[in-house]
Image (cartoon, rainbow, N blue to C red; front, side, top):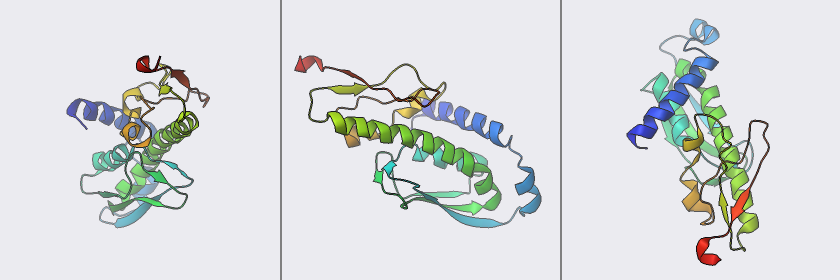
Length: 179
């Protein structure tokens, strides 16, 4: 991730953390010792396409640079329900404070990637390309364009298909070379 994108991603993460815990989690901070460490796994709750794994890792890094986030899957990987996506180890406080934000971001982006992959599969035999809409989630449109475009289907130029109500859309256009 280049420096400019990293700054933008960090802004989104910090805003999400501030909204979720405001960097203070009364339960965690009062019940969990500062030195306590834990290990956790990130598990696929259903079949889908991974997107946002690097952003999820960054959530924990922002909270505590010593948290270890081991990616077992990468953006664009197709996973089945029950597969382990990542292993996380380190400060229990940081893991508990970051897990909801990391999961929310990954679930949103992976949901979009999964839906897009389904659209790409439906049109793979046609001379069309799937393109995105400008109706996107504020602040994260640029982050939604994951590496998975190149890995899944050459027809995918970019993807952003869900509006605020969860409605999914697809826009297709003919490739200029194809007529």
